[in-house]
Image (cartoon, rainbow, N blue to C red; front, side, top):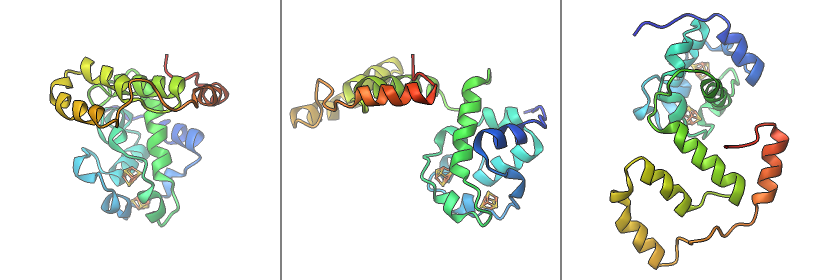
Length: 180
Ligand code: SF4
Ligand code: SF4
């Protein structure tokens, strides 16, 4: 795949995250300790190398930035104290604002559902996320265990947590406004 080189990517990531990517010397400790490295198409240390070289398209089209679970294992292992999880967050944010299709199918839809539910109910709410599963064609495989959980009282028809107002305030104060 041909990728464009974008020398401004390094400074864009620095401006948003405050992390100095140029300090990365490719020790690979981040990638070695990442619990989801088996599923990534570009390892975390390779993401950093691509940022240094300004390969913006390659990073924004990768699965890796969306598969990162924000567990911070890499951040505490980095000998240069780079908060890698924060950089992954930053790259997701840059991806959201770009016109590059995300490397993970349905991820934009998932984010809209997840943030929308969090904003209005204060937490994720299983029946609401079921609408996402329906739209992505995965409902058939979930029906059996969803019914079992419902019968055991593990899934509520109505949202049980009342923190929606505080979350809306958080969304509003962060200036994002949440999912539309
Ligand atoms: S924060 Fe993301 S990249 Fe870092 S170890 Fe966890 S899953 Fe991997
Ligand atoms: S652990 Fe830090 S220095 Fe090592 S490759 Fe990862 S980001 Fe670079």
